[in-house]
Length: 144
Image 1: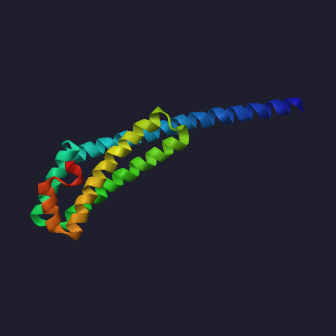
Image 2 (image 1 turned 90 degrees about the vertical axis):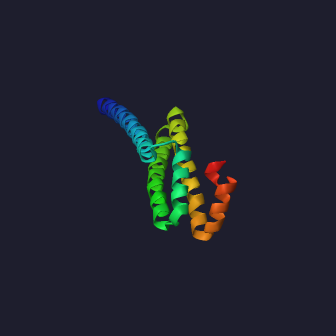
Image 3 (image 1 turned 180 degrees about the horizontal axis):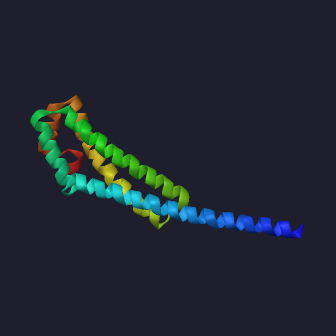
């Protein structure tokens, strides 16, 4: 009887070690995925974020093409969703440690860009003249 109890105890230790290994593997996966999403963002932007949004805004004010703005929103939104997922998974796996803070900075970066693009999108939909006026007054979110 004692032998089987010892074997059962050994099995739970093995399970714990396997779960710990899986957890570390999973943590590494989510960190790598967040790094790839940020790399995709930088490749997409090609310039610092404010310069990219400035150029985008000027292009939009030329023709007020809502399709172009929606495309930006979709692409940035997809990257934001990926980073949010990585952020949540790391939080669940490791808590609010160094890994979580690193991904949190990445989430903030993409959220800032999404907010800037959303701000422009609202003006394109609601009041194009106000977009132009706010642009010249430096009142758009990305200009502050």
